[in-house]
Image (cartoon, rainbow, N blue to C red; front, side):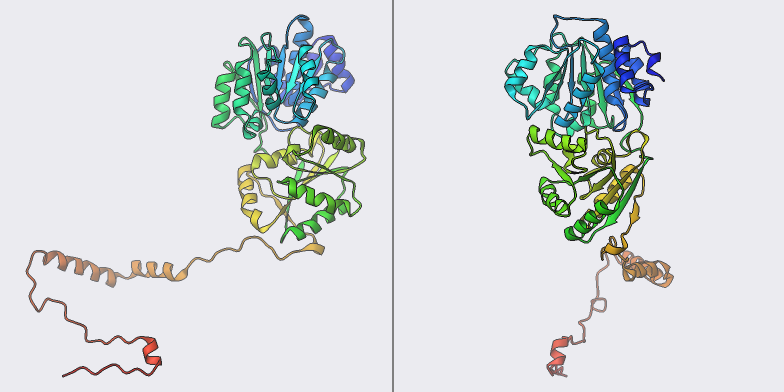
Length: 453
């Protein structure tokens, strides 16, 4: 579907043309007509599918066609991370560049007083992270009485990060007569279902590719590693020998990211670091360096897995395997965007094999196993445990021994027959005449006493 086929305002259409957007992506094609008709939506689509424009275009079109210059904020977009908030804000400014519509940005790491001034100006569109917005709400710096649109972007991630209660607090303070759009990597899960019941009104579900669908244009490989030192050698080899414009390296902890950034830089590679402990000024600086090409390698924690739209990322390396399948998908989704080819390589240590296998099962695929001949280690994967043949054989032979089976049946019959009968001395068990001698006694030369006649 072409954007020109939609009844978009000419100023919105002009911005699309200037940005080179002429054909809608699948998620935009399915979402835009329903959103423009005022429907509440629950949308599931893969990362990098064009979700941002799918919810921005309908509201920009409506606001420009129906101006309300004296109203309070008309649209609220909630996102889980600062990086995603900044990305949505920038896209909103580009699409609204020929309109009077203004957007405001509320997120952690920025000056609180400056944000108060932003809220007082009543921007038509407000993009916010839940934690910082709650702080402003506690100080009564907001006004959602005129709200027409509520967007929950990456709702599953907000729940994963513990923002569920904050999101419901915010939505309960919003105007009830509004249109709500919820975007998520998946539409399953009890928490998400409960949130949808409270926030949405008779929503239409749209499901395209989900986190479990294959990324056809991303080549996914694993490299087995003995330990951290071996991983370091594999990582440096890949960064020095693979072909890429930009590379992203993911770790599970800030400590690992801080450790490996020095190991990468000492090899003369142009690398930066991004994690949740950095303030917003530092984050912006690193992203600017990567965008401008001053660095071409970024080592990051999962704070960068969602919301970053970096052009030219052709290589993703998981220095540590992601904690779950959804996080893995969002990591590798930084490459192979816009129909381009990408390569994702995971370095798997002995303690990560089970995690890797569970992700394979979740995604219903097999990662390609790769080796680097100069750096082959001793770890080859888990050893297969052999079953105990003795125990199995014994049970098997018992089943196949009819004589033994018959004997046991006769014994049970005899016991049953004699139930209630008085035992005679002949029937009583006789004392054993066998003398039991331990191995230790024999070894020491001990002789058992002779029985008296």
